[in-house]
Image (cartoon, rainbow over the protein chains, first blue to last red):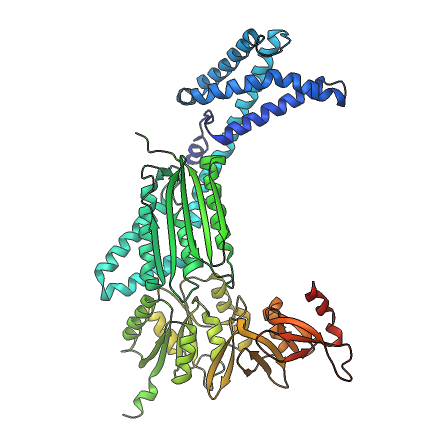
Length: 338
Length: 255
């Protein structure tokens, strides 16, 4: 039953409370619950806003305290086995609710009410959120292996593969040394493409891969391809999803350099700013040319993988200026462990 | 002795990538002992290939499909303007769309990396093989051609479509006007209209004007033309009459 191994691979885990997307989801859902509560209690449309205000006075401080506590304890909680971590989260919420009930009065105009209600509602909302994140994790888990598959299929263009093999063949007789190193670069490239690409990879490794790839393209295109690297401010220890840059560079060559007779420059700029890794790629672009659907597919694929790894914290923006095409990727700065 | 060179197959290699050309030359050298042939020229672009083939006679062109500026299929179409067009064997590394079409129309092609044996077989049957029809090549063209071609004194003259101001149907030909002069091309106006779509606008039963070249409109003066509009053109002093049925385009452009 080899198939079942794969299906059971997912193990429940608490969400990363330091992820912006996760926090936004928590805020959104708790507030929706508050609105629902106010709706149920309100005796008419005119009564809704006062009710919501009443509910919010209790809910918002609790929500803020919870978020702060979860962000602070994120690492500890996530290191625990899942069910202990989940119990701990429920416990934290109940303690916070109790504290707020007991000591909140001097600070907030709360009509104390009975504490069991606080406990029950807090418990219920927390439990529902935990269930939601667990389901979401399960739903995304096959998507991540799917993304790996896509990475494998969509990455290297057959066009590139066969043209490169052809270029290497032409070298074998006249320059065997160069043919050797070209085949070594190709082996490296395909090793990465065919690897299990679910884990993050060191940025420096991806850059190295891009250099090998560009070396192969240079073989075919010669003077027509010029490359400018601006990576002296690159965070060497950053970790990024594998094959995020290489396909973009492949696109730049395919759409920016190959359709031109004149030489063109691809510029790659990687830097760190405000705890975020930025990668900016530029290539020449001619409006007259016909556009291929292949470009959009590669972009959608990368966007999807960025989202799977970083949720709302990563972005990919493309911009077309008069004579250039630019892709700007922003990713959170995930450091090499240790 | 003097008969021998005529027996040889005269081959021209066209590819934008230098290593691909050099590989092809190696392969041709490998084929030479089995099949009398001679490499008479090579070109790194469609434009260079057409210039070369206007100058020298060749029996077969090994023509790469994916090239900048003008792809191989367009080159093959312009080649038909020559007095004695050479046979064409397309080469490509990967082009799913074109390969399917080649299979359908039994057009010869070679997949890169090319095997010497496969190249030899293709060259051996090239003299006997039927030439692809112009309509077939036109069907294969995925995007509108980048150039129109006119045949002048045995040479092919290329007119970039971006520089064309208007196209006017004459009896058997179409007159192409660019900023410098006029050319006669063997085309049909209706087909050109279909091929280039939005680039041109029909102002008259026998005339297509490039949208980008339209500078404005003015009322025609003189008897009989009362109330008719004339198109004013960028880069050319001629004025072209707008037919009664096409008057609405004047309003569209005014917006």
